[in-house]
Image (cartoon, rainbow, N blue to C red; front, side):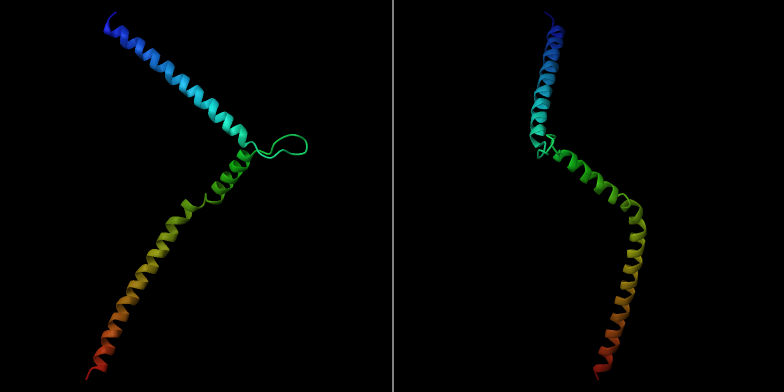
Length: 105
């Protein structure tokens, strides 16, 4: 057989091994998720912990959706506050220097 044929066969075997590993891990993940199911209710159905997590994540997403809209105005306000504090710092430096000159004879 030619090297091309060997490479083609090796590729087919590698793809088959990849799909087998994928199937194995998907079955393992599914079995773990089924165990998480939840507590049984009176009528036999389980309250899914996964659905509760999904609802919680959705609530967080909804509650934090305004953050990107609010950050630019907040940054502008904080920048103005910083500039004001720098001006106060400069003025206080001048006041301290003036008081120091008055105290020293």
